[in-house]
Length: 98
Image (cartoon, rainbow, N blue to C red; front, side):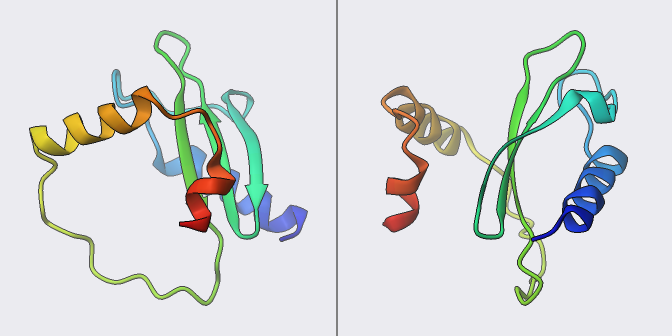
């Protein structure tokens, strides 16, 4: 991954991603790269009036993207995610080995 790939990623995020709370787009200054592992980029998106959002983006050029699932996120999904994150210590490397 080179600097041009990262710049294109930031442009795409800036154009397409909005704050889930207020719908405001993110300025370049409010997008931070928090880490890169292989072709996965961890981003922090900071809104002026709301808590930051953490996002992961894959830059794998060979990855085929299938149709987007039409399945809605249910309350059980939210509860399972909450339970997972409650005890999560931030060791992404361990999670990706599973």
